[in-house]
Amino acid sequence: MPDKIDEQRWCDLHELTIDRILPGGRGIAHAEGRTVMVALAAPGDRLRVHFDRVKGSVAFASIVEVLEPSPMRVEPPCPYFGRCGGCDFQQLNYKAQLDAKVEIIRDCLRRVGGIENIPDFEITRAPGEWRYRSRAQWQYDAVANRLGYFEANSHRVCDVAECAVLTPELQSELERLRREMSNGDLPEDSRYFRAIAGDEEVSVACESDRQVRDVKRTIHGETYRLNADSFFQTNIDLLPELIDAALGGAQGKSAIELYCGVGLFTVPLARRFERTIAIEDDTDATNFARENLTCADLGNVEVVTANVGELGENADAFQAVDFLLLDPPRTGAESRVIAAIIKIKPERISYVSCDPATLARDLKKLIAGGYSIQSIRAFDMFPQTHHVETVVHLSVND
Image 1 (cartoon, one colour):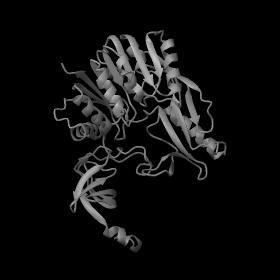
Image 2 (cartoon, rainbow, N blue to C red):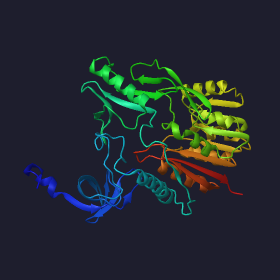
Image 3 (spheres, rainbow, N blue to C red):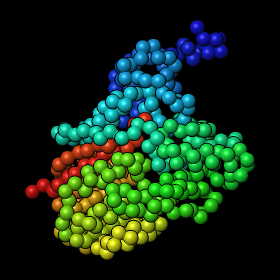
Image 4 (cartoon, one colour):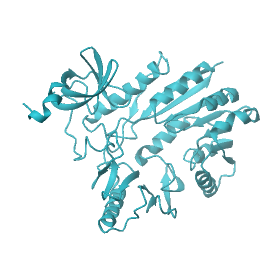
């Protein structure tokens, strides 16, 4: 029995069994007429939980005690698990993580996209379940002398000495920054540090210093120059397979790429199409993309620095487009971007997504605009988290 000071909390406890994992990574259960969302749960867990927040018939809960663990539950190896907001799937064995991600995609396609006839698809497992993350952002609290990641559902910094998903190069960089923090050498006006590992060096950026080292990263035989402020995929080991899946068998006269970044997909696209137009609104990224194309000796690409949302204003300029690839941020593509794609009407579309919910939302619009899903592939780019990368190929209806 808990101490008297915890008596009220103990009276608010509820016992339940987790049915499955939902998009967002929480487990779902039902108790006392409510749908209950439980963080850090495993399907089949019998739990004692506390309702942290109740909104109508939905309660959000945290685990107080695991009464009967699921066969899928494992002991999280990270000492920061449950406090650090980074990894929310360490309680699941790896097969359960993969199965949950497939179901998350299916759930979003059905519930958000209204798609009933979902093609069969598989998820490609990561070569390494740990030590895969080659890009990171560490939060810094100069007052409390903490460096790490935000705690779950807060902006309080969880002080992290070792991160089990970082590549050895980034772990060494984290340790170096922590030594500087201990010596009082980190800039007090910086709230974060970004880092990305190249082939031979690590690039680090902080808020107070804009002098960022460029590094080179070789992927699938292509070399890319970038730095810590650049967006780039986190899991280098899976990138060759992701690129192959995104491009499929595409080739022809003309291609368009939206949200091209530093040119990860642009370079291989340029080798398959006579002419490619790549659009990105970040000036530094497009400068890198042009440099990476030049280094690859590819002169058949026009890299445009512009807001992708303005695509519709120039839609009439694009004629007979064979292939369009888009890799938008987690928020997905704007409605006007989807409308412009439908107006341009490329023969084939490849949609690379890191968020199943916004993917499903956008697919619903593309299907209504005259497209059909041809294939789906999933990639576990983010082991130990609920995040998943999805590639969907569509073709225009005859």
